[in-house]
Image (cartoon, rainbow, N blue to C red; front, side, top):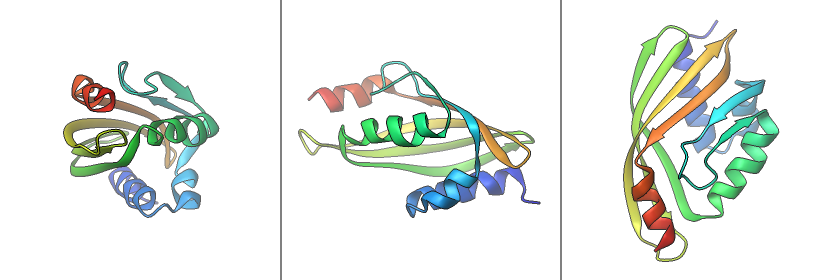
Length: 130
């Protein structure tokens, strides 16, 4: 049995390594993934296909690089809060933008069932628009 905070840490490392099989196994089939309004593609996505094939494909089409860099993991049992920053390089201007984030994960039966994002959407939208 893996601790919830360790599951989320492993999710970040497998996503960074592009280990699709590992990070998909960590997610519930009907995962709920909420991206803030005013972010590129901001809304709630339901299911692995919607999240990992539709949302991320569209998100990455806006950026030359997009990195989520976790810095602190807060363990609240079934809820794990991750504080960190995005490092983004836009496609149009190749400008590098840093933006802090909070990610809130809900874990049930060793699966990520929900993700909620909080970040400075204005800063990111301005970078995408320039």
